[in-house]
Image 1 (cartoon, rainbow, N blue to C red):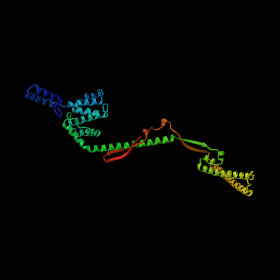
Image 2 (image 1 turned 45 degrees about the horizontal axis):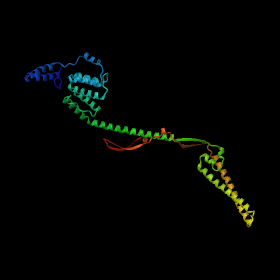
Image 3 (image 1 turned 90 degrees about the horizontal axis):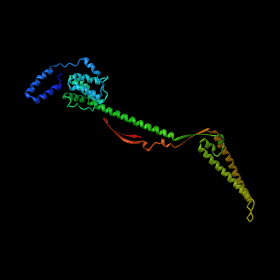
Image 4 (image 1 turned 60 degrees about the horizontal axis):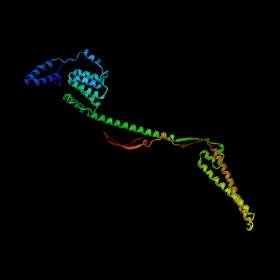
Length: 351
């Protein structure tokens, strides 16, 4: 047993306390002075290599238990063994720690042990690793660690403040970038679902046309080919011409009936009746020729523009289980992000 640079061994302190309660103060001081040189004079040689090699045969405990077991070496002022034990827990191997909180404690104890054995630079490196891993790391407990350990920790943290701020800014930017990527993926997924819904709500109908139907006048062939505008034009024109033909025939037949006088009525002028009859005959005759020409033209056009198949799209209702509920619709909301470069106001959405 040897004295650490942070104070006397525990057994010596306990001995001094017991002495102060049972013996006069002068005798207690003498006992302390007699015991102290003997303690200081004892060598501080580490355990033999063969004894330390057997430590790896101990069963592996949980991370917290392993740190507590190694911390007992620090409490008993076995600083060299403490350094070896915590380095074993922080380097790859069978006993390497994996949980963040025990790793942070182990680094804290390792830095304190390194300060105790005089390796200040290595302790600063260990503190720097711990602070980089957890920028919010608190200073060591003053009830457990001496002021020298706390001073080194504060000095290292002060030197890393700028690095910590930059790391926090990078972390914020990365979080914002990931949020924007997630938002873009959500919007793209929403557009994809909308397109799938649109396609699923449409039905494609293929109708096979017939040459015989295309030979029917009154725009039937045009309607079959899908040219509804031209079909309505032929239908209207042929209907008007057909009405002219029917009207002319009706007037001519009516004039023939006037040639037979009725009893008690004056006989109409035969010259007038003949004139009206000729006019009516000429009108329906011209109309009939025009109707034939237009009908033939419609049939020829329908045959020249004949479409073997006509594809049409019509809407159909989706099944209830495939419809989007109202709460699944896109909802826009403002977003405010504060970073090192200032405050950014944007718009985000969820679905």
